[in-house]
Image (cartoon, rainbow, N blue to C red; front, side):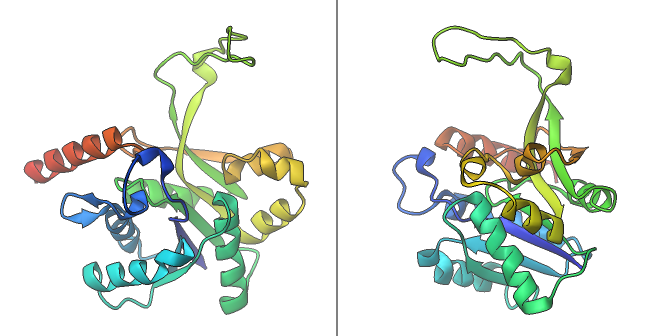
Length: 238
């Protein structure tokens, strides 16, 4: 079966002084996370959409679903983990405990604050997951990326032709994901920036599909203003 998880476990410290996690802030006339959720509801291939959010906000999330989506048995709200990968693991264990697992079961994980993901990106993730145990969504790096290992001087300037920017969704065969995570040491878990990195650490192949520049992540107030502008242009275009 195909499952999706919307990662809403963070509190959005980089958003600044807000009274709620950033995924619940309004984008146009709906919370950011509702825009994101609606995109996944368009994908009929997905059996369940799991939302992992902070424990104290689970009731609020359920209220948002009831208000903007209505009763939908496809949607489940669970408690997130201590970090991003902990939230993903919570969903994997929820799936195993409630529905069981087969070798073919996959989970599509996506940032709650990437509200402009479209069906093409979701569909390409599903297709790629049939070939790879792990799939990333990426776009080519438009700017030169420089590295500084000491924070004072440049240590390298990698060739841009080989560099990409990571987005989400990231999609995994669930059994392989759980086994790979469980094989990590505590030190390896500390350096994880996303779930695909654990496969790279363990020298396992990670496939990729092309994302879109508009599949942006709303992290700061500037991002939120930009997202509102994108939404307004889209609405006017329609």
